[in-house]
Length: 429
Image (cartoon, rainbow, N blue to C red; front, top):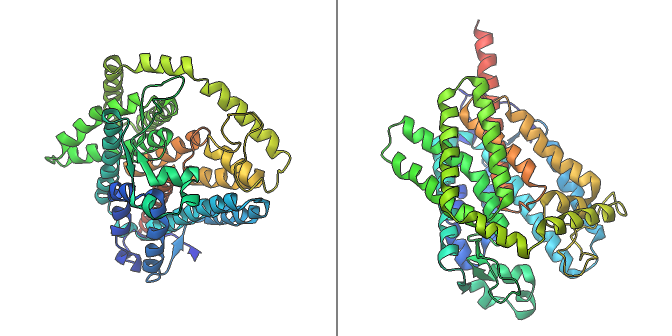
């Protein structure tokens, strides 16, 4: 594979790459959820993409070597694994990293088969699935489904905490038998409420762009698509995802600043309108009461700060390769060290070199997509920035990683197409 820049007007064999592998996984997510597969469907989809990629000469963007070095470094850290259980978790996560890599390469090479409207419609559909899952969590907080996966797995494997959560599905993270009962927080179709908030915050910028394009085309689908945005605020607010609010705030402020620099006052007014709708919804939905109750019975902020300090201190004892995987915390009852945030998981599991490569890749994507002249490129750039903020407190395996890789591939394609057009125009003068 070689780095290259593709001219916008030049057809390539990548034009033959179909969009259905991506659409099938995202829009078919409810089926994967019911079957118990969840994120395990991504390695299967990646295998299909690899077969399809064999039909075309591959291109990768400049700087892709940073991500490849990260994958190599992660594999090297396997020498730190000390139990069979952690080995299983290591290879599961590594399979997800590889799947995200294949997705990135596939989307980058299939840009012509992925027109903007098709991409936005697919992401909008996935966002709707997320919103519906949120409502199901509100309406049926105690729902539990034993999936077909739970019926075929042997007991010792099913007793693994992660495997059990995938095989026995729930709409919420809620324990009515807990000593301090907190209001149900929707999580479907993801394992955790934080995963729901991460996906919602990264998908929403694409959804708003989809609505804007429908409006510009005078499409009859504009009104229902636009109405879905305020409707989605109910599960979003009731998820009590403070990190999601931070991510959406960063995205809104950054996007508004960029469109203001462009002099696009209509887009700026649209963003302001969305903000007003959000503030109005905040007055109606009982968020403040539930959030105060959660803070009274939970010390998540202090607990996370203590866990992050422990994670950093323990990484200093194995700074090069880390520990290969999260390990139990020294504090009884606390989450494992190397959890509660993608950055901390990478740091603890793969050392300072690993986290430098991981963050360096995201930073490269952000810098390289800033130059994209289209609104789609700006949205991709905004999503990458939001991810860089949220990795400090959200684990982004796998949905968040898929979204940011997709945003990076599309944003880089937009920027490179613009550069190619500019060079072609200069050559014709």
